Length: 292
Image 1: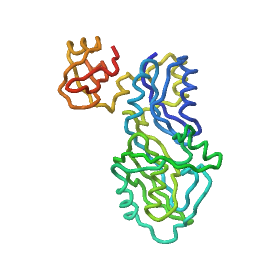
Image 2: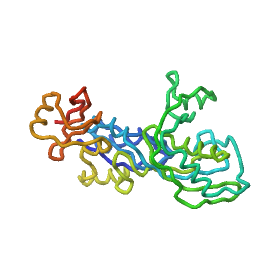
Image 3: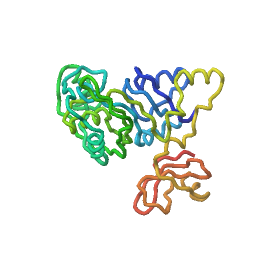
Image 4: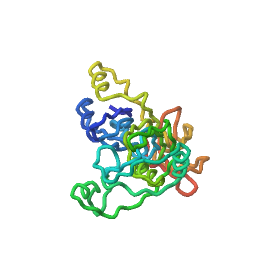
């Protein structure tokens, strides 16, 4: 069995939980996911099955879109609604939509983030959440991420010293949306956290077309495997180029070819079929992964 599955991950499950359950449902050991989701986050989780696991790295690298909610007025140790309150700054004065929109716009582009203590980033061989659970604070490495969109999508809801609003963010791999919500609050002069989050798009797949694990289990029982998408979905974010018969044959032998492109990484197709992922080597392209 080979292909890509657009899974709708439910709250309370890790991405690895989803993979474990799918192995049982599909009777297939070779399964991986293309982008971790925190247990409390629901939404699109790209899954690769069989030979499609060879494109997982490109699914992981693909940009993602999230929709969620920011709550201004207090922060938590996990930076989301599941954590313990660590700071309270009641919203007593007037906070305007224009003020928030301007602050959000300043996060668009390349920004620097410090991963939250409750995350899987490793420091000295241990995951940060292991330090956090032991009550230890360690210096965390900064990382550069890219935010291509960060906008408010609802009116402000202000009551009981709290201000809530919905947002949409399109971002690169490695972005912590929780941290984005916290940093936005800091820019406004308040403690804040991410109170809700849903991933609506990843690796060219959208939430509206996703399947729950229950959906998959029922379809398999009915011998319906229409949930399997072609391996081509796994390279949806890579630049693409069509090649001819001769070029396809050369790549099948692992040979380098010359192509009219300047991209460092290229997905090449022959009659809409993925042939290979190529990487630039001087003035030509060499095969990185061949799917023939």
